[in-house]
Length: 196
Image (cartoon, rainbow, N blue to C red; front, side, top):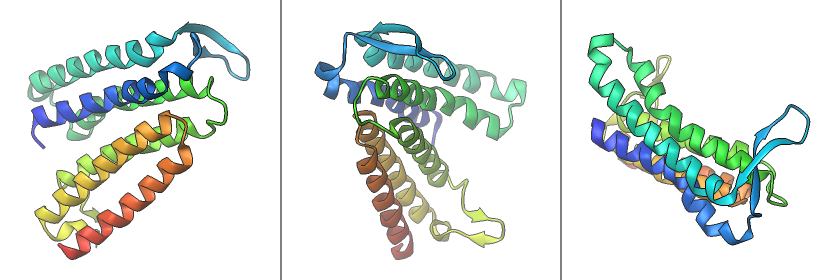
């Protein structure tokens, strides 16, 4: 995936929590916890508009900066490819995680939201790696999409779309449905890879 497409993809992932919060905005309390203590009550709260839109927006801007910095200085600083991938995906995963933690604290029955939101974000990262052909083997064993570039790109797209849908669904409090979306996506990607 070229640099611009990857920046666009990671920017969309940064904003997905805001899309999910827009759906449930009316049901959120005016103040939402944003800082948590180990085993205690929330350390501080913020207005719901900040949690819903401010945090993802700030992390979107920071994501764009990270991409700009890595793309501009990667060769000069000799960043390994793994470090570049980590830096470029850190802000989207953080955006999903911190928004999910804050919203989970105020939604009744939203158990497992944080875990499913992070897993969903990691499915998107996995999809990008498959799309780019960076995950074709586990040890000596070839994975189904390693048969052709077309299969890898199709499977990668399926994983990315499934991950994005699961992020939104999990942040609105439907963790079980998000898990189902991921499972169906894995099956669909495997089927698509075998057919290609």
